[in-house]
Length: 349
Image (cartoon, rainbow, N blue to C red; front, side, top):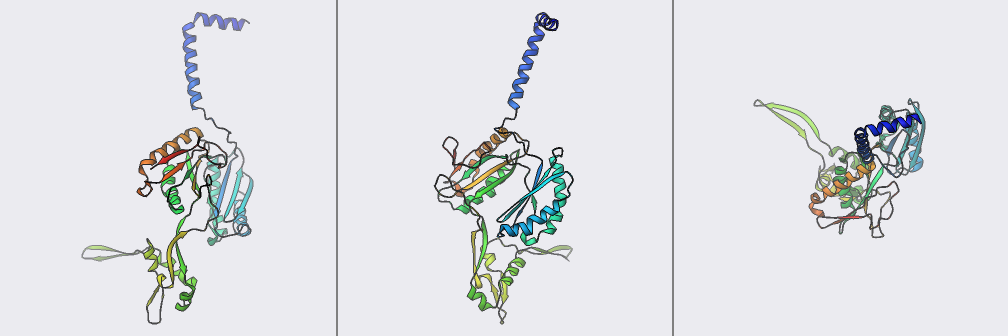
């Protein structure tokens, strides 16, 4: 009681000091509340590093045998590891290396990256290359958006998302990765005619080797002439379908070149798909997912992503001027669900 009485008497005798201290505490409290990271669910993910290997066209059994098991063996014995678990699916292998709670995340990634060379040597080159996953967690999917356009092909939507919108969003502080789902990845395709290929006396392996040799640049040094240096080099990278059609595969007995155009067709086509994405029952769309850096404020990063998307509106490529794209913010940790009108925002270019 004497202590409380002393506090009351001091407060009454020094009213100005108490008022100033109260105002200061109020300002500091408001400032702390505004800067407090608030999230629906706290991120309690342990210290883990993922090693992801993409191996298209391999079954889960082959992925497990030729990719997952060698990577797991390479990660055994890393200091501070408490658990190594894996997931083998069609075309992809994910090995998760879990460390003790007292380990620093970036130090753990450094330890895993030192073992990646051993993992690369253990996995056959034709089966993929192990890579570190992004510095994010299962709760890092803070923003999802859908890209769709009238009279636009799935290839155009995917290209706009991967080559234009995605790189711009990666510059937002706190974003480490932009994942895409749906759409179609454009690729150069050579469709061989079996009859013409047999008539030319060539094999599929010779065609593959010819394409590999022809799609590269090479340097040849330089020649000194008239007090000048003339740089010598060959430019062989394929830049168009016409370049692909003119690749020489072999020759006839009369030494007439046989090109790709003589034995097949060169065209643009979609890459082998392992899934699709639809929305509201109105057809396929391309979906982008923004992954947040571990430890960032999801509210702040989400607002920054929204602002970046608004800034992209006037600078879209001319081909998309008449298109309508749906950008759907999803500030939550839930999986992608049907988008409702209250959550959607249409950006028109």
